[in-house]
Image (cartoon, rainbow, N blue to C red):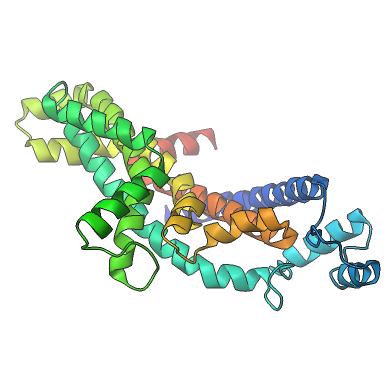
Length: 318
């Protein structure tokens, strides 16, 4: 059985890898075209540089070459994971910027992700089990607020409450565990609300199935009924949402990182657009796209563990 599964898995991974390469190439091409369609360039300033200086700078970064030549050169270097130098940070490459800032964003993103999954799933289960009670109504009001209130407003409220009114947590910077609490709460609020609503609707649907009624008639405990029977099938929509969510949280949030003065990847991505730092824009876009593709692959591999019918259907189709 294992011998049969291994070639199938290898073939599946090979197809996904080939598809990922095509998707990344398309993203590079579209992003490259959009960047160069914007008026100006990375060295365009209010005070124009002398023509001789501008020519020297453009020649150094090969910006004086035809656009197709720049494109081919970039794709060739990107294929070997060389994302090029930054135009606005002398002496630094895009690889250096990602290596320095991604660990910070990833640490904050992972904490926010686990917080959102844990709180969202538990709240959704409680709301579904106690449907049409004050617990359900309270959870739904909280979910509505979580979706509606922007993260920068929530961040400002958290800073006011826990850094000034009750000064128990630091307001900004990134110097230790205490500095993670407020930005993690601000970043996790909206995903928590979405996960809670997804879990509630999925668990409600699962609780109406015949196998749940059968388990109830056999005297299965509430906790076992929810966790081992209803939740396993109800998690499929939540898992689908977690893939792109994880990629988004791990690469950082410009708003949250700016408010809390966190030296993460999200700030560089947005400032690179203002600065027209072409290589940083392309590099972070490629990195973000790779994370989405990788997370979606992990999610696809998790699906059969939650619902064996998905694997059986795939075998029948094959």
